[in-house]
Image (cartoon, rainbow, N blue to C red; front, side, top):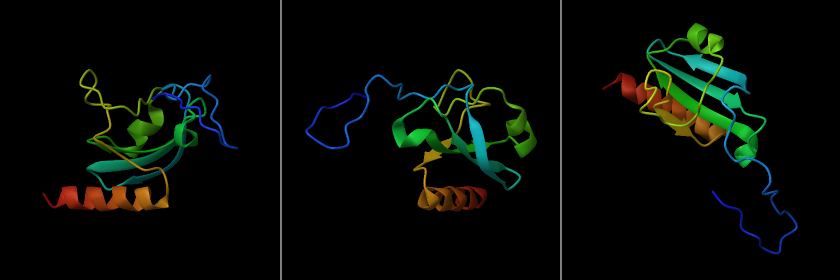
Length: 108
């Protein structure tokens, strides 16, 4: 991600980090259906989408996620167990899409 400079009243501060710090987060809400967990997380050090992320994990439960000290919202082949399988736009529409996604995945 870069920072484009346009004449606008809402310029972005390019000195901030667009990447979330995986150890600095707050879980906002979770939905667990037994196979999948949808998690909305705020990363205060991240400036894109105000640090708000909606992630889907497979094979983990809410209790496990609540104990995690590091949650990287990026897909990773290095840590596939703790890596999300999907991300959605971090708003109410994205939350509903994530729930629909796991419902659909449970039908497969």
